Structure formats: C-alpha cells, structure tokens
Length: 407
Image 1 (tube, rainbow, N blue to C red):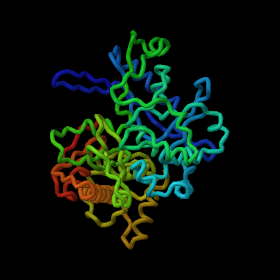
Image 2: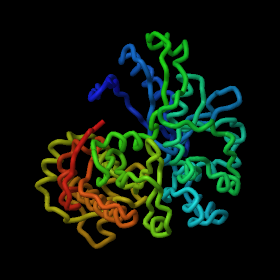
Image 3: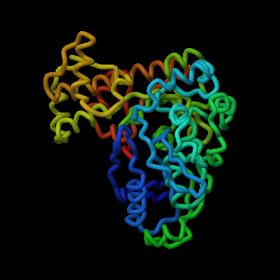
Image 4: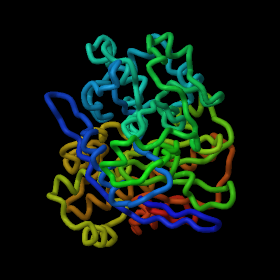
C-alpha cells in the first residue's frame, strides 16, 4: 500500500497484493515467511520511489534467529496445535488471575507466552539467540537492525500494559528469557534504512528510512477509525473480528478477566480494550470447503434467508483450526438443539447472524466493564465491504454503524 500524506490529505493506493498461505509440514502448521518477504520486496518494487517504509502484520507469532542472524525454521502458525493444554500448565506456575493482573491479556491459547513455553526443551529454541515477532522479522531483513515494536509486543502476554515495559516477574517465573527479544520500539521510532542489497533488488534509490508503525495490524486499524470523539466502539473485521474500545488506561479487574477482555497497547499511549471473535474466518473456511464460489450471490441469498434460524458462538475456540468448517458449524447448531443450515446461503446467514450477535455482546460488555458509553460503532477492515454484516451488526447493537475504511 502506498500512502501520500499531507495537511488534510491521506491518499492510499494498493501497489501490490500477494497470497499468505500457511503450509503444513509433518504435524506442524507453518507460515511461509520467505514467500511473504518476497511479496514485500515485490511490493516495494511496484510502489516505486518512496520516502519511508513501515510494516504491520498479525500478532503473537515469531521467528527464531541464531547467533549469526539466520532464521531457524519457518515460524509456527498460531493455529497449530502445539499449545494445546499449555495454558493449564502455565497456570500451575502463574495462576490465571495473577497473569491477567500483570499483563491484562485475554486468555487465547496461541499467545506468544504459551508458544514459548510449548517450545521449551526444543533444540530449535535452545539454539536461538533472538526472538523477533513477524513484522519485526521482516523489518530486520530490510534493515539489518533488530527491534521489538510495542503494540505487537503487547500481544505476547509478556508486557505490563500499565508501564509499557516487559512483565519481568511473569517471564522469570516461567523461565522465559526476555533478553532474547530485541529492544522495544514505539510507533514513530526509526527502525533503520533499507539495506544496499534491498535497494538494488527493488530498484529504489537510498537512503530510504524504515519507521516503526503500529505493527500489530489492529493497532493501525484502530488508529485509522475515522472518529472525532471518544464515544465510539470499533470492530476491526477480517479473519478475526476484534471488537472493543479505545481507552486511556487498562481495565484489569477480575470481572474483565472473567469476560476475557484484553488490554493491548495502541498508538500514542492508548489501550485497545477488546475481545477476539472468530470473525470472517468462519466464512473464509466455508468458501474454501465449497470450492471458492463467488461471494456476492451467496450474500444476496443469505440476505433473503430466514434470520436467526440457527446461530453459533462466534468466539468458540472450537472454530480455531482450519478444515471442515461447514460440517463443524452444523454440528455446533445441532449440539445446542437448533436446526443445521440446509444450504450454503443458510450457512452464510448463520455465520453473519452469529457475528452480529457476538459484536453486540462484546460491545455491551466492554461498555459495562470500562464504564465508557458509546453512541456509534465503527467497522473497519475487509468486513466493512460486507453490507449485510454491517446492517446485521447495526440491528443487533441498536446503534448507527459507520463502515470503512476497508484498508
């Protein structure tokens, strides 16, 4: 994405889009991070001469580097099963309530903390000198300078959201060496310059600075919400729906932990108080299972399908893994005494109704727990293009929904 910014001007143009396909080798699901890096280089080449570069990506996943800075295998995908049961193991050392009080992060089985505990004892981790979260890894390959950007670091469950620094006590109790992480950076900090061989490969003329941004994509998405006042909720939609509020301070109460809300750090010292919902992953997996049919006719037919005939819990981790999503949705409906969807359109309607209801539950809970009323809901990200989802969310929440930007 190329951006032209100036006084009262912010123009965005898509320069290049490339696939991101997880790859399973043996019994482990990986990210093809070298392919992603190649896509970044292709994007820089397509963008033409630029004055600065910033990288954001998803959260929690990381690459391991050896003492020479070489990557020790492809990063493991957060949907991999290696963290099954690890949370319970961690809680025997640091009880869940203590962990939340120290880090403010919701329980998600794929948090970086659980991934690192799952990797303890492996030869790969024992050989590693450096841990770099995915956007920091890509930045390192562009610049040769390691760093750990704070908004993404705050998703590791190893950051204290009150101080914006590492939760040293938690890491020590769990045997996690925080010295393996590069120094923390904040959005706006310099992250180096494109290396000579990167300039040569992309055709750019140096120097080209690289700047730390809100490298967790949700941090950048929340910063992009076109709200002029503080009485709004946001839903960042895509593979996930991340619904919540932008606050000045974390909410670390026991009620907040019980409701599984997270306190992630945002731009300019803000806190992203939110809860994860499975999001359009449910729909994406169904489309994949159906052979990737055209979405527009399915959405049209879903709009005509009976509303609320069957719904599922869109926050259920039972939907986390890939594969057989239509059958799993049908089974979940029947397990709760509801009829299963009979057609593709009814499955799509079930998904969108379920997401809309999950959006309402999450926003209502966030408002109550944070004592922060809202009068508007902003939907940003790819789901902002889904008019049916936006309308169902507005109907469920009883609030106006403002859709966009999608990127």
